[in-house]
Each structure stands twice: as C-alpha cells, then as structure tokens.
Image (cartoon, rainbow, N blue to C red; front, side):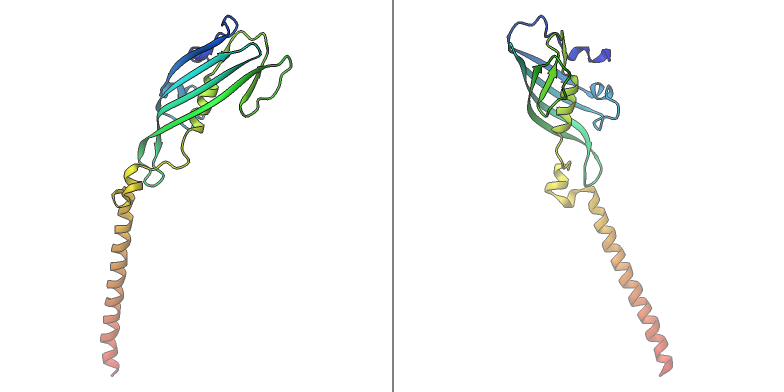
Length: 177
C-alpha cells in the first residue's frame, strides 16, 4: 500500500517530545480499504504524537463530513462527524494482541503507520442514526411523506368502492321488495 506512505511516522529518528501531524482525509483514502462502509468524505485529522521513553501516546481529533444515506428517505447526505480518541503504543519483544486503546510494537520498529487507526476512528465516529435535518425536524418536508399522501388516497378510493358497492346492493335490494 504505497498510497498510505503519507501516514507513516518515522519513530526511530524522532526525538522525545510532542509533535503534531495534520491529515486531510478524502474519498481516495477510503478507496484504499477494501469493503469500506464509507465511500466519500472530507475529514480533517489532527494527531498529537507524544514520544516517551517507554511508549508513544497518540491523541486523534477528527472533524468533517462523510457521505451517507438518510435512514428515513435514503437520499444522499453529507453527515457531520466528530471524534476524539487516544491510543497508546507500548513496546513488546514478543508479539501481543492489540487491546481497545493499546497497541504493541517491537522496540526496534523504525516506523509506525497510523492510516488503519484513522480509518477505524472515522468509522467509529459515524453516528448510529443518519437523518437529514429536514427529515428529523420537519417530517412533513421529508420525501417519504408522499407515502402518507398515497395512503390517504388509497383509503379514499377504498371508501368510494365501499360506498359504490353499497349503492349497487341497495339498488338490488329494491328489487327484492
């Protein structure tokens, strides 16, 4: 993945202390990940990287918009996202499994790629409910509201049929008498 070179931090030659890295995430970033749920977006990522003798502490701040569909009307929307996450990178001679917010790397690693963690954080920052503001605040303006109009028209036509059918029976009942 040569396209992810921009997200590599050369930790071996980096002196201890705090540094800031800024990334502009666009649709081309999400294309690099197979089966990404997000296809388009524009997200700013600010990474505060604190190199300490025994570990690295990374504070990610993200803000921007991603392409999504309204849960109500399925129209395309730009969904605002925002998130803050802290990750710690600890050193381990043996291979260890990552924890929720702790990553283990070999002490002799010369670089660290943050692309995967940015990708995950953007996905985790996506709200559970994606609804256009007009669909949420003014449901009558939602494009799905036309379904209610259709329902009313169907009910009216059913009532007309019933009244028509009743009138036919009424006329036939006259012959009985």
